[in-house]
Length: 183
Image 1 (cartoon, one colour):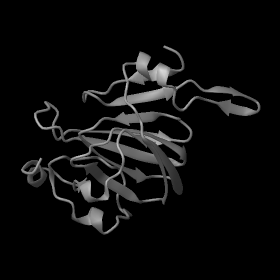
Image 2 (cartoon, helix red, strand yellow):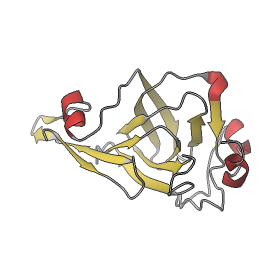
Image 3 (cartoon, helix red, strand yellow):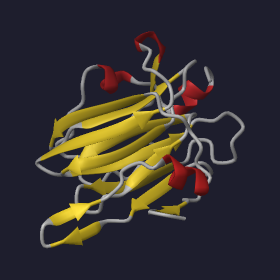
């Protein structure tokens, strides 16, 4: 394999991708996406859209998914630090309802691949964070779904959540038990 190292967490389909960083006194260079390297690692998804957001400390975006047009996401942070989380919503999966979280930062340069069938969200831990991601399907505003970020049945350990900032929509998502009846 060329320029990346792939680690596969216990939940099937999730991948942590660490690019090779070439640094010297001038700074650094890295490939943030190389289709050949990804295919060699067994990741043959096709991306159709790139997105970027900026958020301030305490902002929690998520947990989001698309219902009829699910998206795989390759996420990374280009400025700041976030705690990034994926929750398995694949019906019949042996890990249905389980979560995995990872710190992504401009410093560690890790990327996280979340395949179709997962809810996804992140909490900003730095003063601000810029978050970039590629997706495997286009965004459909009428197809949005959400999962309660602090559902005790899932038990995500977000760390310090004393100052969580949510948008109005993210305050009202159902818990896993309720959501499971509609999946």
